[in-house]
Structures are given as structure tokens and as C-alpha cells.
Image 1 (tube, one colour):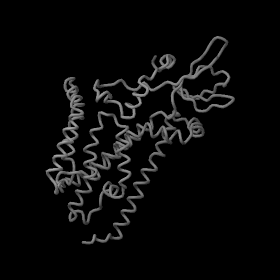
Image 2 (spheres, rainbow, N blue to C red):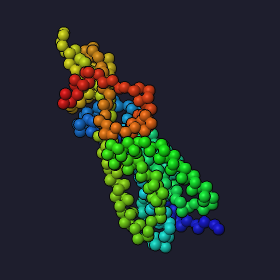
Image 3 (cartoon, rainbow, N blue to C red):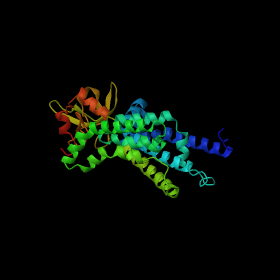
Image 4 (cartoon, one colour):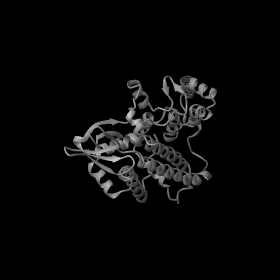
Length: 338
């Protein structure tokens, strides 16, 4: 049986959806990067221009990727999962949607290449906290519609394979789940234990009467996630924090905490942490110390085979190479509130 020919209006909608999707994918990071410079500059126009003139685009992209990959991948995998469920639900009811416009999320789903979905899932796998990695299981099941209802041939073998995977999963995370229950951390235990079971029931199609409400709620949820992601990324630092020791007199020094914007033979330009630009003669600079991000205090005392649940896989592997990140005394002495 040959596939039905596409109508010209359907092809036009598909092309327009593709343009909209790629405009968001390409344009949003550029806009957010500019907003980051504005926020980093404290809203001052001249400081923003100074940052734009001296911050290397490669450094800006690197800072965007390292700080935004977790949030952006989270928003995108949520988009993929929700739109996939909506798409299969609409395809399951073609008569009901024959004269209705196809929702934007579904049109985007139909133009997203598979390689982009796979790359986004891989980025999420290495940047999300280990605690939240199990949530990728229902996301993958919804995105690729991996449902038990689709199992027809060799049903017994596939069900046995599924059972083996569940046994392996709970065998791997069982001690951590037990530790979470023992410590009274019920949310962490639920996040670790529930996703495999949720993956079995998360795929579509859903009831026809619930599709339209889900379209509205899904689009609203995606908009909220994108707005929260944009805010979090825009307020993240662009430049590393350092403490520069400057000689102000024969036996006196001053420690300036902030970010070095530019260095030349004449002066060092520092964006002070409390605001304002400071120009220091290069000859007056005695030392400069990089202040690592101390991060938030860990909430859970849970480990998965030696990896802390609040570390990502990249962070966990990094701690295997550099177990301790020393924090200089000068960084603690100049920290806000110290």
C-alpha cells in the first residue's frame, strides 16, 4: 500500500515548523548569551560593551555549554517526550483532527531529526545529577514510544528481557534506594525507584478527550521551562572569579575580588564582584588566585557505587582525577559576607 500523498498546505506547515524550530534552537542561545553579558555587567551599557569587546566568543560558547547544558537538555527532552505523546495521540484520531490545526509541539516533533534527539539525551546523561538520571527512562520510552502494546513477535523473549533489565536496574540502585528509605529521604527514594515503572505506562496514545487539554498544558509547561532555563542561564557567571593582589604602598596590598576582563602591557581590567570596573597597572599586580566554585552544600548523603548522587557523571569522573578542589585562604577572606 502506498503512503498518501502530502497536501501542499501540509508541506507548507511542515516547512514553517522546521524554520520555527531551528530559529529557536539557533537564536535562543545567542540571545541568552547577550543577556548574560548584560546581567554580568550589572546592567551598565558601557560595561556591557566592554565585556562584549573583550570576551572571546569561544569562551562565551564554552561558558554557555558548561553552565546551560543541564538546563537546556532538560527542557529539550521534556519537549521531545510531551510532543511525542501528543503526536501519537493525534495520529490515533485522524478524523478528530482533520479540520483542526495541528499543535505547534506536534509539528516540531515531526521535523526534529533523530540525531538531535540522541545527542540531547547523551548530553543529559552526562550532565544531569546522578539522582535524576533515572528520569531519562520514561523520557526515552515516551520519545521513542517504547510500549509493551507494540510487542507482538517473540513476546515471551522480550518480556523476559524487560524483566532482566528491571532486575539489573534495581540490583544496581537497590542499596541506594534502601539507604534513602533508611535515612527518611522519601523523595530521593521515589525518584530513584519509580522511573522504570513509570516508563511502562508513560507512552501514548492518551484518550481523545484529554488531548486538547494536554496540548494547552504541554505548551504552557514547555514555555515555563524555557523561561526558567533562560533566567538561570542568563544569571550564571560568564567569567571565572579571581582574587588579584595589588600593591598599593610599600608594605600594603589590596585584594580585589572579581573577574579579569583583559590584560595587556599597561593595565589589568577587573570587573569587581560588587560592581564597577577597576583598572590596575600591570606592574602593581603581585599575585592572582583562581577561586573555585564551592557549590551548594550537599543535601543527601547517598552514594551509587562510590559516586555521590548530586554529582553528574562528568563531575563524578572529575573527582576521581582531582578528588579535592583546594580553596585558597584569600578566596575565603574576600568572599561576600566573610
